[in-house]
Image (tube, rainbow, N blue to C red; front, side, top):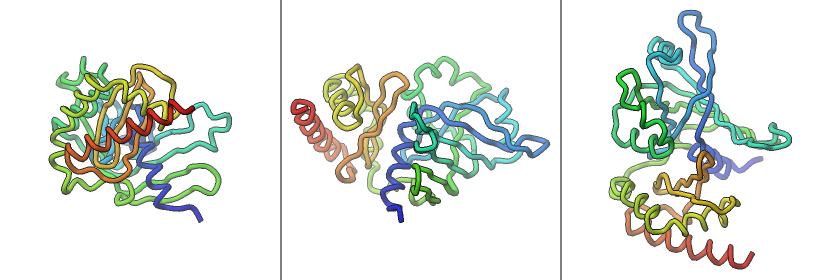
Length: 243
């Protein structure tokens, strides 16, 4: 029997690291499923967020019926993609007017800043009602919102400081972020940048390649985050130097 706690952690990491997904809505007026590619990010809790225009077919569909699903494909370049991880997130989609959502999306997709403020574009969030994770043979599990979403209570100061922490790490500790990528995500060297932080970990990116770096334990304050980021840098440096 697969370990559901471990699988839920893998599913959260997959969602946090994703840059794109396939959004499925119910076509109006036929009611038939309609799916297409979108760019995605997550809010601080881990719920998927996306940016679409009123010209998009999805917008028309979601206004009529908010039920939707997003497929996150983590199979990458696997020779047998059916052995790779994928996650279907389902729930109801709704528009959000939230500066944190806007910031978190645009730091992951900076090219979208060109059109994000056009009057016909809106940010949307999928309010999760369930999920189905497939991580290869024998790793197939249904997940609840409680398995996927991170509670925010107690972490208010960390989340408020997120923009400053991310900017500080990118401006002053880019070397540490590259070490995280190499040691903990098995990625190649390069100008990696941090794009988000939350109590469970931080998200890093190089172009459209994203990775999730998990913390040893939950961090709730900027001081906690600093200690954990320093610890991770020391551990990563030791791992890279010994390889």
